[in-house]
Image 1 (tube, rainbow, N blue to C red):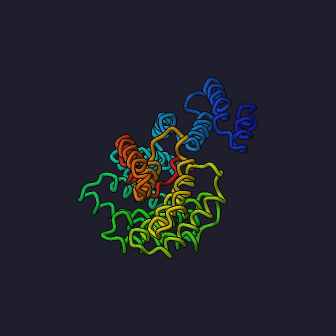
Image 2 (spheres, one colour; image 1 turned 90 degrees about the horizontal axis):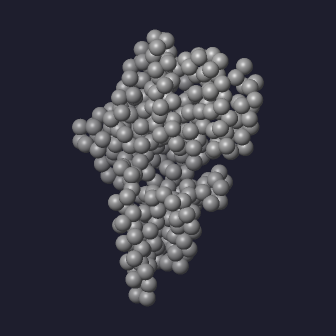
Image 3 (cartoon, rainbow, N blue to C red; image 1 turned 180 degrees about the vertical axis):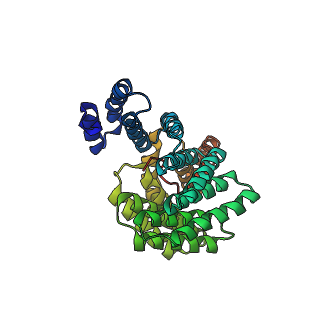
Length: 351
C-alpha cells in the first residue's frame, strides 16, 4: 500500500537516481498524509519514518535522523515486544552516536541491543552490538575502556566464527579486525590485524561498492604503516590498489579520493621524488578545499604538502604558511576526528 502512493513513488524514483535531497520533500508529505490518515504510531507511519531515516543516513544528516529514530524506538517500546525491529533501532542509534563520537550514548544503546540479541540467540545482531560496544569503548580513550574494547571486539569475532557464512557478517568481522588494529601495541601487530581484515573482505565479500570502499580504506591504513616503516614497495602496492578501487567506485571529484592521493604523495616524498609528490598533494587538495568543511584528510594533506615545500629554500616560506594553516585547522577538527579516521563504522541506517 505504501509503495503505491504518489509521494512514495516519486521519492523512490528520485533516490534511484541518487537525488536524495530532492526525495526529502515527497517523503515528508507522505509522512504527514499517513499520520493524519492512520495515526502517528501505525505500521504504515512507522514504515515511512524508516524510509526517511534511510534517506538521512544517505545524506549523513545525524541531527535530522536522531529524533526520528528516537520516535521509532518509543513506538517499538510501547508495543512491549522484544523483537528484531526494536534491537535494529537500538543498533542504529548506537551507530549514529558513534559517527558523532558520542561514546557514552553509543555504548548504552549497544549494551541494550546486545542484551536483547543474546536473549533471542541472534548471532548477527549480537556481533553488531559487540562491534558497536567495542568501538564506543575505543572512543572513550582510557586504559580501562581499552581492555574492555579488546574483549568486545574479540567476542564479536568469536561470535561470527560460529555463525553461518553470510556476506554481511564477514563485513562485521573485517571491521572488528580493523578496529582491533587501533588498539595494537605496535605497528607490526596493527599491520597483521589489517592484513587479516583485508583478507576477510577479499575472500568472502561480494565486490559491491560498500565493501570495496571499506577495503580501500584498510589498504590506505596499511600503506600508512608501510610509509612510516619505509617499506615503500609494499606501500606502493597497497596505495595504488586503494586508488584504483576509489577511482572505479567514486565520482572523480569525491573527497574520498584524497586519502590514497595524499598517502601516495607522502610515499613519493620518502622516495625523494618531490615533483611527483607535489602533483599528488595538489590533486588531493583540489578534492578537499572547496567542500567548506574541516576534515582530518584536509589537515593531513596540508601538513604533508607543507613539509615537502619546506625542503626547498625558495618555497620554504610557502611551506611554513601551509603548515601554519594546518595547525589552525587542526584545533577546529571535531572531537575524536583523528581516531574516527582509523575506525570502521557501520552504517547507521536501519536494516
